[in-house]
Image 1: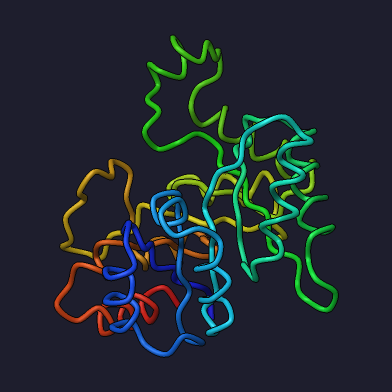
Image 2 (image 1 turned 90 degrees about the vertical axis):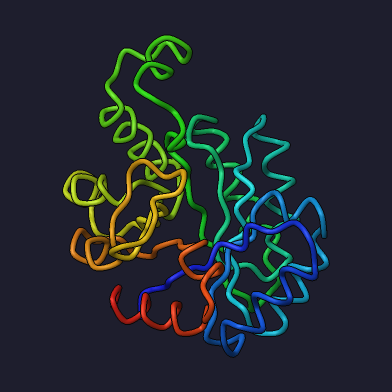
Length: 234
């Protein structure tokens, strides 16, 4: 079954416990922990949840000089996570270093976490790309270029919009992970997302995994919402 990853965009243990208690058994749940929660609770919470059986996407978007990223990735690999992220804009050496750090830090007998590269943030507009990042490429060309660099540099996949997946599959191949946020079930509010797709569209276009937050966590029955989205995506 392809993963539906629940984004836990909270900043305290009480909210986290409440959400997790309403999602199902740990072995059936894949969660995303981002900066907000990680910086509040630290790595011990990640290790604890991994030991309980949760699959974890630790989304910290590392972006620094290669040696610093290597050392950070080496530490993250010891937490029992499944996915983690770097910024593709950090360049090929940095992406290589992150992958090497994950391999070096993974305890013997454990699976090396998958490395996902973030292309351009969904908050970056064409205007910002052109006039602040001084990039001559269009957004689609830039995302494609960064995704190709990520694959050549040892990443296992990218974080991208579901609207970009079909083109990326054609250009980069099927032996790569395409993890897509911006998923909204039909009839749901877009909230602050501008480029969205339904779980069924993400399945059709070839997303490897999808990330869903508020349409699950803010409902009256998170478990039912989670199971319905899993069914639609698979």
